[in-house]
Length: 157
Image (cartoon, rainbow, N blue to C red; front, top):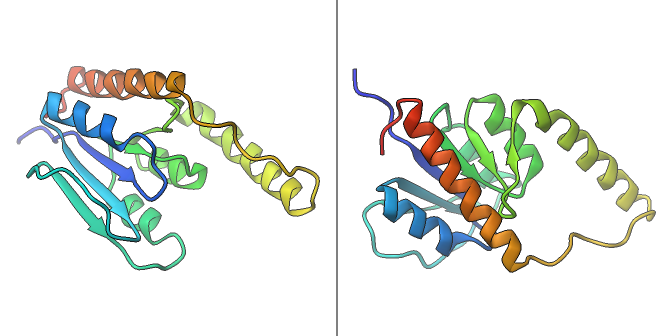
């Protein structure tokens, strides 16, 4: 039986680190699925595949969550999607480099839901802080670490 190949799935519509993902994927020879609701430019590379889903609510999330398993890496800022992927056994990383784990995803999801309720009630009006070069660097480290860890666990590139 061949070991499972590592695959990266990108929740791409608002992802600020696509260029970094492409560089890391090229370095390791990892397949990337760039999933979005609209046409998006991607490099001409047989290892990078664009997937355009319908405009339906959570269509990109559903496409990704239905396909991931242990040995896959999902890049998303969407906490509910990260939760679904972690439960399926995949590694999930935010564009800021935060790794979502089985140990942390429950609290992260609960906090996200609370903040959503507070925003809906008008209690909180601010959004997330701006994306920074420090976030980009943390993301690159987290993605590299996830791939190295998966390779050590016997997954291939």
